Structures are given as C-alpha cells and as structure tokens.
Image (tube, rainbow, N blue to C red; front, side):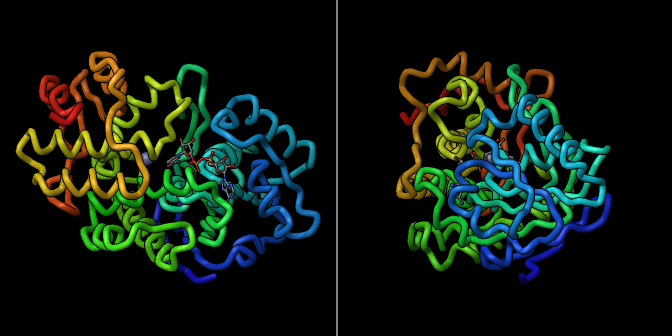
Length: 343
Ligand SMILES: NC(=O)c1ccc[n+]([C@@H]2O[C@H](COP(=O)([O-])OP(=O)(O)OC[C@H]3O[C@@H](n4cnc5c(N)ncnc54)[C@H](O)[C@@H]3O)[C@@H](O)[C@H]2O)c1
Ligand SMILES: [Zn+2]
C-alpha cells in the first residue's frame, strides 16, 4: 500500500495507507471485528481462517452488550496482547472495535480498515473510540490511536447509496471550512460512488483532519472543534430525532446550511457561501432544511447539550469565508432562532 501520511500523536505515529481492497486486508495473525453487511460483501477477501467476529450492522452495535460479547470472544480465543484487532467496517465497527482494543488486556494494537465513506474521511482518523449508553451517544470511550489505517476506496463500490451521500456531507464540510479548491472540485461535478476523483478527495480530507488532530489531539484547544461546522445544529437534530430517521451526514447537511445562515446574520459569513452550501448539498442529494414540524425551543435546548457549550452559552464553528472558519462562542439565542429557517 502507499503511505498517504503519518499522524503524530502522544504515543508515536500512525501511518495512513491507501491501496486496493485486497492489499488493505492483507494482514496475517490478527483477529477481525466486522458487521454483517461488510462480511457479506468483503468477507471472502479476508485471509483464510482469520478469526472473525461478525456483529449486527447499525448504531445499536456500539453498545455495552456488543462490547461484552467482543471482549469475551477475544478471551475465549485466548487472544494475547500482541495479536492486533482489525476494525473492519464503518464508523460503528471502528468505534466499537477501537474501544475493545483500548480496554482488552489494558490495550492491544489495532488497525482500522474503514469501509464506509464517513469512516474513511472522518472516524478512522484521530483516535477517538467509544460506545453508546442508553443515556447518550459516545458516553464511554477513549483516545486510542490505531497502529495504522488502511484505506481502499474500492470498498465504497458496495456501500448503499444513502450511506455514500451521508459520507459526502463530511467531504463538503472539509471544503467549506478549510479548502476552497476541494469545494470547487465538488461543485464542478457532484461525486458518485464510481468517481475516479474519490481517492484523491478522501486523501485530501484525511490530510486536513490529520493536521487538526495533531494540533489538538485531545480536542481541548478549540482547534479540532472547527471540524464541527454544521454539527451544533446537526447533533441537536439527531437528538430530537432520537437517531431514528436522519443519518449523521443528513443532519449536519441541514446544520451546515443553518449555520451558514447564522454566520451571515452575525456578519461573518459572506452571502455567497450560504448560497453555495445550499446548492451544493442539495445537488449531492442531501437535505438542507429543518423539518417544519421541529420545535425551535426544543432544538435550541438540545444545542445546549453540545460538547462545545460552555456555561450554557451556544458555540458554533462558523464560516468566515469560503474555505475558512472559526469557533464562535456566546452566540445569542435570538439570532440562532432567526437562522433556523430561511426567510
Ligand atoms: N471516532 C470518531 O472520530 C467518529 C467520527 C465520526 C463518526 N463516528 C461514529 O461513526 C458512526 C457512523 O459511521 P458510519 O456512517 O460508517 O456507520 P456504519 O458503521 O453503521 O456504516 C453504515 C452502513 O453501511 C454499511 N457498510 C459499511 N461499509 C460497507 C461496505 N463497504 N459495503 C456495504 N455496506 C457497508 C454498514 O453495515 C452500515 O449498515 C457513528 O457511531 C458515529 O458516532 C466516529
Ligand atoms: Zn460529523
């Protein structure tokens, strides 16, 4: 595989590699954790007789129950502290298997092979691993970087279209907040799963994320937080929806349009950035407006639950131009309310 870059973290460096699907899975003497969809499509590519735990697909797998199942499975196999765990799947498997690796025998090496677009451009890079509790998402977790990340855009050829579009929301986000050139590439032709530009776009997103992760490994300095453009509103929409009908990328697509409008109301975001967000995301097939039935008071209340919130003050990563942004704290609630729907 080809090395795209290395992410430096407190414990060392993590190479991000890129290649074909068969190259990505060529790992001997490892144990594999995956989900049923990935196992069905790509299971035949795995090394012969590789011990593999196949879990149900979906967010409900990031649970205490599946965590328990996975560590018991490792103990049953007598898997030792030198045997790497391979997280082979989307963000759900990456987060769960990463957390299993962080805790089994007080930590064993693990490798990320992200198979969804969202996992390739976002969740597999940065070392955040977690499981959910009934009380909330990602409530138990750690910062535990993988030994390496092995990316093959070939995996995306079997990804259901809705999940492809879902991951594209994060790609557009990188364009809006950090890279006007990437944004222009997206606008010039809306990417589809067989797009030959995908691997260079994924590589660009990974490089952008890696830079922020290196500058703020533990997400405490407000640097990594700029990746949260669209996410204060997006997360609140997901909470109100109960994580049922909206996928994360769909929620943040709406969030990006609303937060672009918010930036414009605050005099920070140029009007053409708002128009480009709306147009681009809609052409990609993403939703761009808050459902009319949403209760604004409940939505703003849910925004206060965001991790960027300090002392009940609303915070947002807002565009200061096309390809630039900054973290803005203490945003007045009445302006947030005005930005929720286009006037
Ligand atoms: N750790 C982080 O920094 C971070 C960042 C963003 C999101 N996340 C987490 O990521 C999760 C969402 O990730 P996701 O969108 O990848 O969800 P996911 O893992 O559920 O994958 C989406 C769907 O696509 C299927 N799938 C994945 N790859 C496939 C392939 N190649 N072919 C066919 N089907 C395939 C899966 O089975 C699933 O049904 C959430 O739990 C979120 O909290 C973590
Ligand atoms: Zn996101």
